[in-house]
Length: 81
Image (cartoon, rainbow, N blue to C red; front, side, top):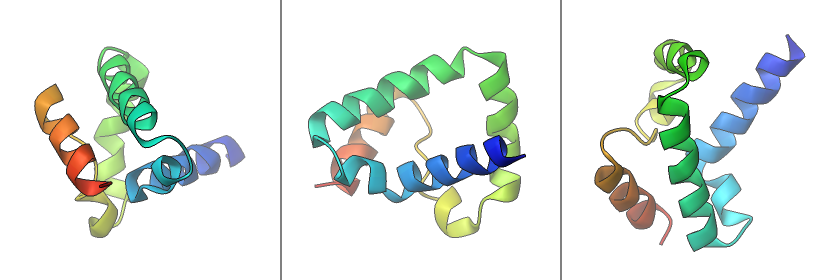
């Protein structure tokens, strides 16, 4: 169960931008985009992503990067300028 808590905490930090602020912004953006694309193709993450909206508060849910790759890039660049 502690692994689940760690994953949720890590996700919250990424969604809130804390992970991006602590590292190189352009490198972090690329890493986030690559991770999102990779996770879309993995069934474990697909199931997790179906559950996340049910457990995250609205304020974090609205910040989750979703959509096509261009929307994701635009949202990340705008959010962390």
